[in-house]
Amino acid sequence: MKELVGLIGMLLLVSSWVPQTWETIKNKKCPLNLEFVLVYVAASTLLAIYSYLIGDWVFLTLNSLAALQSGVNLYVKLRHK
Image 1 (cartoon, one colour):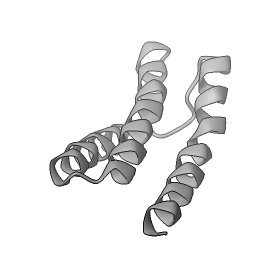
Image 2 (cartoon, rainbow, N blue to C red):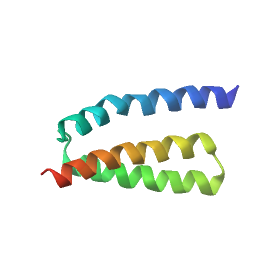
Image 3 (cartoon, rainbow, N blue to C red):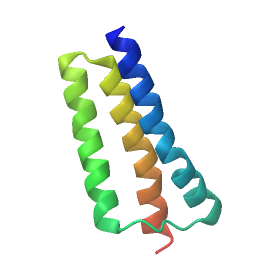
Image 4 (tube, one colour):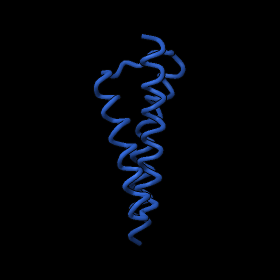
């Protein structure tokens, strides 16, 4: 039951990034603040590493996907500045 709650929360949180990431890819423009995106990528990556180290697959998946999606936004932001 606990993992189901975590899985649902993870899916909701990750899905909140999907429209922004899709818009960024489609328009080749990221409207997000560069500093925000940098901090988000770094924080998500570190939390993914931490989740791996403690063996929490829900948070590992969540933070890995968050890092990937925000990484896409960062890539587009830097490439099409």
